[in-house]
Image (cartoon, rainbow, N blue to C red; front, side, top):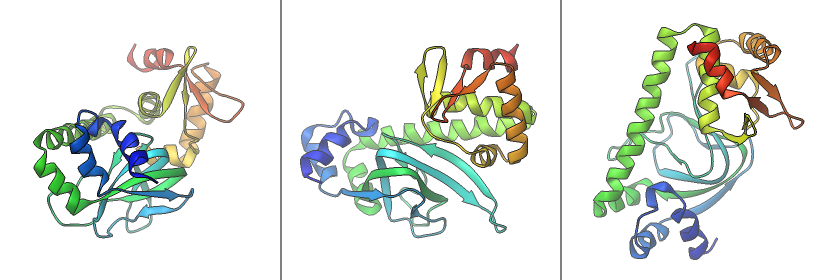
Length: 230
């Protein structure tokens, strides 16, 4: 990919949106474009932390595994997002696996050079801190959901969260833009595939969710909120 192609794409990333052309050029110079096929790993949990990535297209799953191989999905990331969010200004390893769900084009930046750029541009560093702060709040909210809500309510809250991060508005429904298996949904909140399947069937009978002809979930967010908050 050309210098101009990378620069145009990085301009659309919220983190870099307000940088001058000169400042952005310093980022472009250290950037590389990589294309990944579905079900391939960008990096694995425990590997040396070497690069930060910005998604230009596609979908990336971030998840952890325990010693028994059990999977816990941390997030499903799409166009415009960066990862990982942890580990800056210290040496270490990737805290989770990053696996491609749908063919992805990524801009990769070596972490050591990216850190030097952050030092040179304090305003960029402040933006990064805000992004990391939002991620921390999201994780706190998920922990609160597990403590204060039963499994049925947690599944509803998961669907509502996905309408904000992985969906587009389509009439009265939010249409998820990623195909999620019941196993993947279960791994997001630490429940079983059978529980997810049973609950989704129940929500569908109530008219709170549906599935379109291409297999994407359609979610009536307004009705779902009433199901749990009224």
